[in-house]
Image 1: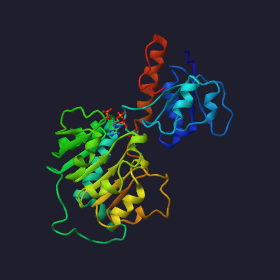
Image 2: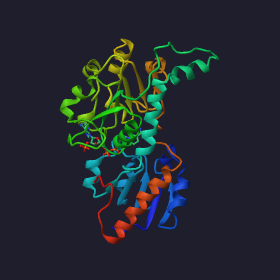
Image 3: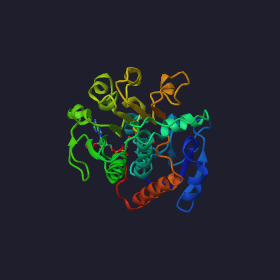
Image 4: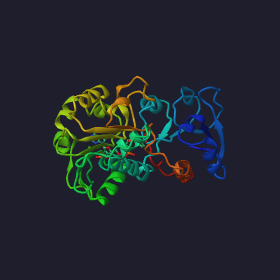
Length: 309
Ligand code: NDP
């Protein structure tokens, strides 16, 4: 494969200005900002994008997704057309890890109700036994890849008692017990925090639903930084309504943006962020690093990093 020109699709502007990435790559390759959703696709060898557009099948050899999740790409179709797909796995650990710590502290140190009270100019201290510290709380991290490890590192540093779930069930440093997916209920049962960091695939669709919420502690906090459909959102609403869960911090939703009429907006103990857990001013630099690495690999005939197809 030869890649001498790259189009950066405007869809990346959901995360950073496309011009920033263009300027960061301009010394390595011919690069331009494109709008594949609206304009006919010019003949670029490769595209860097957040959205998938069918026009990519007409001549593009390589698509790089600026996200780690590739659930929006038709993987089989790309394979059939001989188009290479790479993702941005590996860059989100620190940002998502810190966001998850932020969520945990918001619940434990009662910052969530304080911020809500502040918007009404209300001086409203928590009950004496409402606040707690994170040390020694049990936390179950479902998915121990880039995101999961970023979360493990930071939760361990704060003294949480960390267990995890991963497809292979293989042990990992700083994780006291790693469970295989079949033991999910055992893993989540006694955990104060259950953090979701798995890709959205058939096996993880509605991984967390009525039975899982019933298995969790009724003061447990569910944290979802994976993808919306990993959680059965209606069942989550029911569990919160029934006070069968303590609360939730949600970055991703079955429909995004979260519709105004969603009941999730209303719960006192729900913290909502607009799919930005991985945001950082360094995001475009990190993506540029991956694209550059693969440009070198193409030149030297080595395998792509983060290749999905
Ligand atoms: P990785 O591929 O690095 O890690 C995925 C982890 O999930 C692995 O530990 C894998 O197990 C585990 N896993 C896969 N299937 C299952 C299953 N059925 N049950 C339990 N564990 C499973 O991915 P990343 O950490 O980079 O990203 C994970 C997902 O997070 C992405 O696909 C994306 O959807 C989402 N994401 C969200 C962001 C946000 O802003 N909210 C930012 C970045 C990513 P094993 O280790 O055994 O293979």
